[in-house]
Length: 160
Image (tube, rainbow, N blue to C red):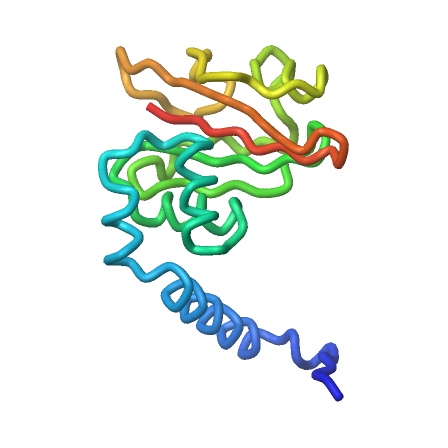
C-alpha cells in the first residue's frame, strides 16, 4: 500500500495543496512562537542552524529556511551542488538583493571553499557586487560557506 502520484497530480491545484501541507508541517514541527524564542539574540550562522535543527529534529536546510522566514536581519542562504546554485532563500529584509546567478562567482570565498573542499571557519567580508544586484551604501557584506564536500553539497550564508 502507498500513494502513487500521476502526472495529473502535479497540476497547479495539487501544488497549492502541497504548499499548504508544507506550511502546516513547518508550523507543526517548528512553531513560530517557540522557534522565535529559541533563536532570539543569536547571530545567524551555522551554529544557529545546527542548534535549531537538533532542537526541533529537522534538517539544517529546514531550520535555515525557518530562521530566514522569521528574522529581521538581511540574510541569504545559497545551496550549491559543486559550483552550481541549486537553491536560495532570502530573509524578508534581503528581498530583491540577490543577483540572478547560476554558479558561484569565481572570485569569492565560497568558490574557494567549494573548490578546495574545505569549509570556512568564520565569516569574511566579501565584495557585495559579486553576489548582490544592489547594495546598501557603506554596508559591509559577509559570507561563509560550509558543506558536505564529499557529496558536492554546500551552503553559503550571506549577511549584512
